[in-house]
Length: 163
Image (cartoon, rainbow, N blue to C red; front, side):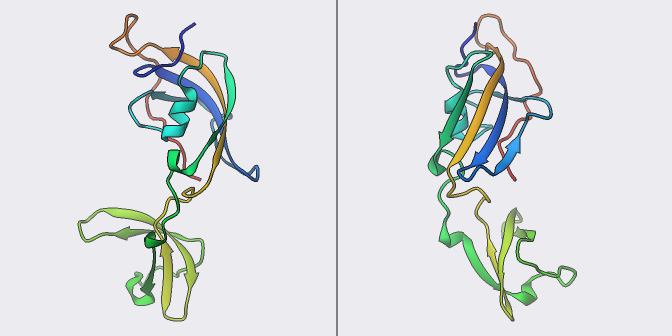
């Protein structure tokens, strides 16, 4: 059996949980996640956990924030005036918005607090600062295109995870 290594395309089923057991993402009811090890299409800790596994292997991996979405950064929490929010938006705590930066890029933000004249937004990834726990099952390993046996399987669209 082929061990998953750098350059190999792998297909895995996974369930991602927080330390309290809350499931934030899972592939169990659909297609397996497909990605190539080394292409940085999934968080580093997930890729590291899959490396060395073979088809049929299962494991539970704990991924620290620095190997997932990073630490929660207070400098990414900002207070802005309510009049900076478009008029058609009625801001509510927990609501996600797109913040347009000066360079034209947009960044997803979460409203975390409302004041009389202000709105507090958080541009951290929702899973930043959290230890993530993944139950992983390797479905298939296809040697990378640079290896004998060539070509990988799957669609390569996999990305871990947003709630």
